[in-house]
Image 1: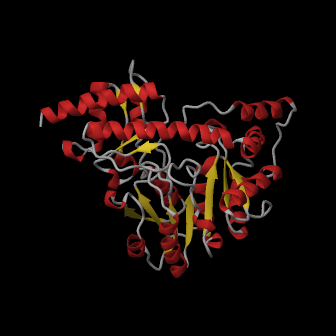
Image 2: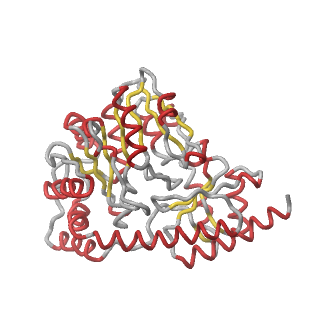
Image 3: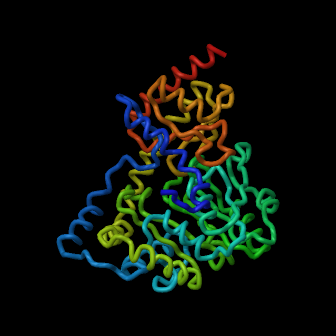
Length: 389
């Protein structure tokens, strides 16, 4: 049969991350440093709350927007950490991970032909979600010399009369870059000047290493212009629970909820009960994991320095983004050769946009033993490349 499939979907490239992990899954003794997933188990008290919910038979649908008690805890959390006040009944929606929030958030605000500004390198879903919503992606190629921060001039140059929303991906996957309060204030002035929206993906907001994360929604005049996305996967090691949330002005949440109720119905009930416990009593868990990630981060930066591999200092998330331009290989060539010769999987920077060329994403959400072994193999690999120049 000759299937007439969606040309829009056909033209979207598959994720550049998965290719390497299909290969590594078949390789004996291979080490993967590519998946953005905490190596910690979900803390026991959070799992226990999920188990208790099952034992009590709490296995029914919740309201479309999520449990009232969970939305109240999300509201309390944002008031406590960012001094932002959200109405839990009108301005918060519980989603199936942050990824669903990105998808339905764009679909709720985009009209055909609107432009979505996407700084890259950044998370692989932004661009395809914009395309699927009917938007034109406008890419800003972030620069290493700016520590992969978005600058005012770069943003001003990208804005047109068709610009609808800026996606703000900080703390950043894959670079580990952050935007401080002063950086955000400058960006906020541009947003207000041009009367556009911002979608702030703050899934790594709890994982910063030199001061606390600042949400752009907390700045004067920005809450009404911001779609704030967060979730439980990274901070609480709850990736498989598939739970996120979005906070936004009521008119936007209404439309997002409409899409959510037709496509999803509600986020997993068991996960929602567990998430209430995470928000109430998960501070020490986050602190423990953040300290461990910071130890690994500092180890990798020291080892890169010792082997003469250039890498700016990431201050958020759990990734490093070393530069491999000196070896005259594309990012994909380097990653494939490294995998084949040393049996270590990393992600080519180009998986996160063309501006990622010449870089690799290495996740340090892995045990120190695995990191030490993998980095020793990387040192051996680049030593051979330098000898053969």
